[in-house]
Structure formats: C-alpha cells, structure tokens
Length: 383
Image (cartoon, rainbow, N blue to C red; front, side, top):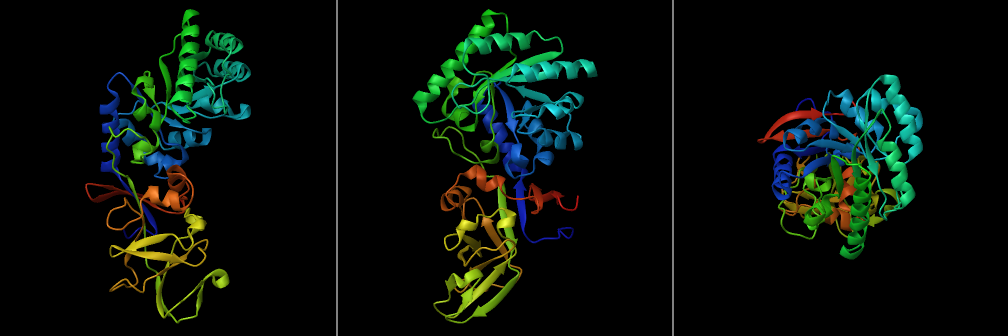
C-alpha cells in the first residue's frame, strides 16, 4: 500500500459485500427486484466503486438520495438504472433527463416541469411516484385528490411512471400494517383507472427481512448490504463489510498527575504509556466517545482518553504488551477479538449504526479487499 498517504483507512471487504447481496436475493426470491441503496457514499463504504459490483452480484438498480450522488455514478461510467429517492430542485431537474436518471416525483407541478424538460430532450423521463402513507416526509398525501394527480402524471406524454413507493415509519407491526394497507389500497385504486406500475416497493432493509408479506415486487435494502443488522427476524445471516483502522503514530510516557488533551479532562492516576492515533472527529469518529470509546491493539482493548481532537486522539497503552509505533489499530471491527462492532459504537455514541458508518468522511481512503488482496484504493482527496 505504498501509494497510501495516510495510516487511517477504511477497509472494505468485497467478498462479504457479494455474499450479503446473494443471501438477500436467496431470501426474497427471483420475483422480487432489488433497488440497492448506496446513498451517503454507499453508507460510507464508497458508492461509486461499489455500484457495478452490487449490480453484478444481483441487484436490479441503484438507489441514491440526491442528484449529485447520481451524477457521481454517471461520472464514473456507471450505466445501469439509478433512482433518486429524494428531492431534486426544479432548476437542475434537466440533469436527470440528460443523464437518464430516474427521478422520484411527489407533486404534479414538478411532473409537469419534468415533462417539458423531457420534451426538449426528446426523451421519456422515467419516474417513481412517492406516496406518503404516514411517514410524513415526502410523498403524495393519502387521499383521492392525490390519486387524481397521479393519474394526470401517468398520462403525460414524456413521462414514464415506472414505479410507486412508500416508506414505513417502523414504529411497530400494527402501525406498519396500517401504512401497508394504505399503500396497497392506493395501488388498487390506481389500477382501477388503468394505471399499472412495473415496480411497487415499501420495504427498506428492516421491513424486507421482518415483513416478507410486504415485499411486493421490489425492496430497497441499504444497511443489510453492508452487513449491518437491525431487523428482528434471524433468517438472514450477514457479514460486516467494513473495518476502520489506523496505526500508532506516537508513544510517550506520561507521569502520574499529568493531563492529556484539551482542558486536561483526563489526568493520569499513575505513570502511564500513552499512544497518539492519527484520526479524530474530522474523520467521522464521534466526539462524544471521550472516556468511553476504545480501540483494539494486539487484540487488547485500549481506552480512548481525554478530549478527542479534530485529527487525532490519545489512548492508554499501559496494559498493552510489546506495543510500538506503527502497530495496527482497529477502530471499528466486527466485534471479534475485542474489537468494537458498529453496533457497540452506535450505542456508545448514542446514535444508530447507519450514522456511524455514513459519517466516516472522504478524507479517509477506502481500501478494497477481495480474496485477501487489495484490488483498489480510492483516496478522494487525491483521485
């Protein structure tokens, strides 16, 4: 890895990624399509490099949140279908048509505008309709007037309504069931009017596993692609895809009574060996992990001490034998060999697993591993 300019890296295991997608496909069967979600830079794993691998492994299309995420894929010569699940401002809507990107539509006005843009490009603009069944974020409200507007959109000459979807609030099975029934009722009402969609989807990662009866003919797996489990059903076995790691950059002896980092929030209770690590909250590590987070060195837990800095942090190495500068440090592992799992990190940081992985910044190079060999290094600051 001589072309790496940092010791702090995010290692991405391609074998585990491919395994997860194939297991998801086995679970849902051939009649259910996969819109694989790689928003937020593929949940931190690197969306542009992974997109073609995910398609080759069995996904039918890629889903992102923003136009810029979709354009990054096109810039990297990704030619398969891309669905933007979120809002695209009117003034840049033409880029979805120009680059053959599927846009989510949740208002008649934007559909009319997109129809005009598609006419100017002499194209059919593919869209998915977002239907709000109670999440109260984006989508057509669940009412007859929305059905009327969707019918108008369906009949526009330069619009191709490929799909319709909604999103569970995931409070409990009872409220999710209410949402599902609203969605199906809307689909059935539209069908009575001759409006039929190729794809119908409401299940994200959790719902796709826990609610097999709600899968319809497409699911939108995100976290489970990367081996992150939040579902209750135990029918899907996954492998974590990422390992966040670094190396010790400095070791010093700190005498009893000396303080470490800003404000001396940590004071040595005895003579101690302190290591400095070259990562901090600017790499996406939660700053509130102070005095409760830890890393793993030589299979030993080393507690993070003092205030976590923007670019560095310190750990207590007093109890770690034979430690030296350059030794490998596991920041996030899979929970084995005393490593901190993504689940544990999320609990300590008082957030969820998706935020833990998505917040790892682009300053950290991604190192892609397959069959224990490095196949690609992506350094966003240099590439």
